[in-house]
Amino acid sequence: MRTPSLYSQDDPLATVLRPSSTETDAQRRVRLATEAEARRVSEQIDEELRQERERMKRNKGDVKLLLLGQAESGKSTLQKQFQLMYKPSSIDQERVSWKTVIYFNVVHSLKHILSTLEAWDDTLDDELLEDSSSVAPNRLRINNNAQQPSPSVSLMSTSTTLSGLSASPASTVNSTRQTNASREQIGNLRRRLTSLIATDAPLADRLSGGLSFSGSGKGGVYVRSGWQARTIENALGRLRSNYEVDYKKRGETYFDPGQDVLVQDVGRMLSNAKDDIKELWGHPTVEGLIARRKLKLDEWSEFFLRHISRVAAPDYIPTTDDILHARIQTMGVAEHIFDVNIHGKSVSWHLFDVGGARGQRHSWVPYFDDANAIIFVAPVSAFDQYLEEDPRTNRIDDSLQLFTQICSNSLLKSVHLVLFLSKQD
Image (cartoon, rainbow, N blue to C red; front, side):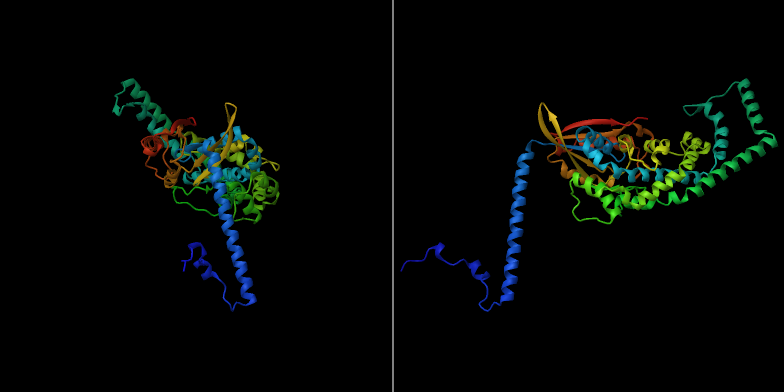
């Protein structure tokens, strides 16, 4: 008797899966539905794998570019410049979502100004007395070696100091009145701006979606990739699990600023308070604190406060210049794809914008393997600034150490490296 062939034997798996002879009609329907769903999932996985293979084959000639650097070095601004050059239509489709960011920048700047004024008791008197008492010794000290002035200079300095200290009672009373009037003026502005300042937290929550991150010493607002669509969807109460909606659909369906009640309310408050904001921004105490570097504002803060009449207009739509000046911190890694024409051939550039805070730098490493080039962004204006997450570390020193680490990384030995010096003092 001939031994049966391997292919003539019954499939053991089919034997196990064979339905029971006592199967009811209801059980049969459930079994068939389960098998159909399993086939659908299996076919979907096969299709996704096929598409992934085709995409990898198609993207073999793509350029992968990393934007690296510390926080607030200008990486996102540089990314927006790329976007403006090679994909300007996406800027137009995202334009309305930047309105929330700009409103938050204005409100947050006002909150910072008022907090600093409160810390200095809404006055410059103490600072002026400190300056007047320290000017003469500082002028006579060079390289920490005190120089003995000539007798004539000493007598002149002494007489000048005595004449300054022996002010008349009338001038002292007048100075006190001016100080009190200035304090009262700032106090009135603070009261009138209270409701506007209170929108700082809701705007931050709208942008971050409730996301909190402990990597920054000051607890800044961080956003992930795709925040533009989620900002609008959060406002409309239609937050979906799948955020990868194409720009065209988002522009036609979801970008309806008229339905965002929070942004509408903040816009009305800004319109009503624009004169108070101008008065606060031009107040001598604020200008004095800025001049003495006791009140430090970023360039975007000064930009929007200088243009508050336009920003607070009821029909305000962010301009391209506004979008470039708008500031919001990146969380994680955001990918942006541009088609760049090189020698008559269209090449896809994958630009990866990363978060630069110390607590986020570990997320850079997975992108080192297949990177073609790195643009390291270093701000030259940071020579007298310190990290938010570590106030003891100078930002220039941190940039230099970070750049050295990237240059010595063995994973990047074949990667083109570009040093981009951003900002100006």
